Amino acid sequence: MENNDILSKINHDSGMTVPDGYFADFNKRMEAALPTRPWENAPAKRERTLWQKVRPYAYMAAMFMGVWCMMKMVDIMRTGTDLSQSNINQDLVSAVANDTFYNSYCTPLMEEDDLYYDLYADGFDPENIDFGE
Amino acid sequence: MAPTSDFDESLLVQRLQNPETCRDAFGEVIARYSEPLYWQIRRMVPGHDDANDLLQNTFLKAWTSIENFRGAAKLSTWLYKIAINESLSFLEKERKHANVSMDDEATHLIHAIEADTNIDGDELKLKLRKAIAMLPEKQRLVFNMRYYDEMKYEQISNILGTSVGALKASYHLAVKKIEQYFEEND
Image (cartoon, rainbow over all chains, first blue to last red; front, side, top):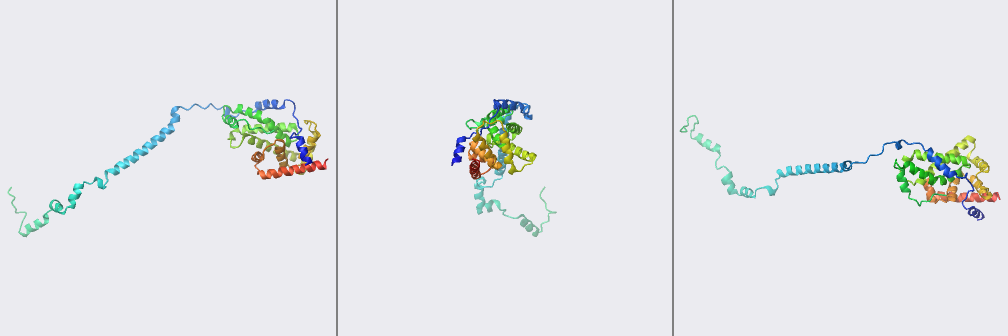
């Protein structure tokens, strides 16, 4: 306790001194003694032009536009071959689905082979036929 | 003795990082920190001339590596670290040069303190300096920073890279040893 009193009595003062005007003198000497650093002689940085500032954003916007165009192109190409229900002619669908219509208009009534078969069976000879020309 | 943090250190750091304003800003650093750093060094090395040389080395080192200072730590913390490293390296060299062990260093320091002419002549303060010289190097450092510089433990912790708990214990032990020295040398 008594010695703690000593520490408080001394009041954080070490009792050490410096010559008069030492710090002011030191500061001047020290500043003068600082060596020149390489970057001190480097040319001053030029002010960036507006285009230099905007350029990265312009490039980025162009890149996004390119990607968007590519995606649009792919989309267009895919839409051209789209077989979804919305692009099929519904009249044609119902017509093909109608057996009567299909048999009447789409299915040949007679096979050509059958016709030739009958002709040959009746002694038809293509060499001797007269087409009345 | 510790520099107050009333001023805006970040502005000074910004100027230090700009090549055009760096030299002027460093002049301000010298003006602001030369005194607290001097006392920090002087309490570790007994003579004024040695403290003066070490202070110069501290600022030269700081100046030549200023581009490495990015402001992650406080400027004062960085400067104190350099100053303390300089002081400890100096003491190590002195020990090797005088061929004395760390145990004998106290006697060596006490002789140097007695030979120091830059003192105010107060016997009690001189006695305290001698008591502090008896402390191990790191304990002496902690005591000086806490007692003379009145630094907070957190600040000392940032400078020395030691935990606050260890610093408190170290300071407490240092005070006990000083008390004992005063009792024995009453």
